Length: 321
Ligand code: ADP
Ligand code: MG
Image (cartoon, rainbow, N blue to C red; front, side, top):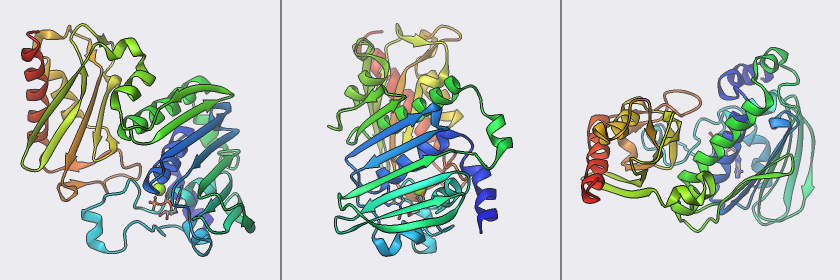
């Protein structure tokens, strides 16, 4: 029901940036190689995501907007080995219930276009057949005024969108991303799999010269990434990005492990820029902790933290810093 979808939306769609995150994650899960994001008025007027992924078959489009109708896992034990970013089947119905949505999608054959208003299907027709999916979300939160009122300033909401897209791009250098806001380009990545290029696009090419590669692994965990030399720091921890199996996560102990790797080489109140990619057996990770899937439970967390700290210490000593 639309009511149940709006209740779920309370958790999944906190702000415009959450919509961007869910739509782009769907595009990534659909094996897209190019994802173009257009924002108008910090996402309240328009959030548009165009991808060149697998698309949705005409017979499945309506189902995709139903609650818990995910195509990504089919049996119970799949929950313990999630390989996609989405799996809860909540995003589309939640977004749909608090906005007006138009989707065009095609698997390469005849495409489908659907128009929803406040969760109700208004129109469905055949559409162009370019492979991929375009989702346009308009008038976000028009029917939930309290949520609208709780949002921060347009600049803050836009910064949150930009931050999310940056982290998604860092997690997927093999995808070419672009982010446009009111006609201004905020990000463009090459999609050639070059993490340094993505870092340059986000933090500036000069920053890249002050980054060092790190690597570590044990039997079932692999750590790779780039971290800043101690001369390049920031006043906030926000420049530390953790990417676990392609999903950016928030994890205090692992963030602390990054900082600890520097020991006394960081001044108090200063933090590195870092992108740490952790690849681990999905069976060691429980992603079904929170609807936004940014919090995860990791069974080997202390070991992963140790590997990260050690890798940074080794890099610093190799460079005699
Ligand atoms: P989930 O991602 O958890 O499966 P969503 O509500 O985000 O749930 O999406 C529902 C379903 O719609 C997905 O399982 C997928 O089959 C389909 N879908 C959504 N967006 C796209 C897209 N951009 N490309 C292809 N399929 C998509
Ligand atoms: Mg999804």
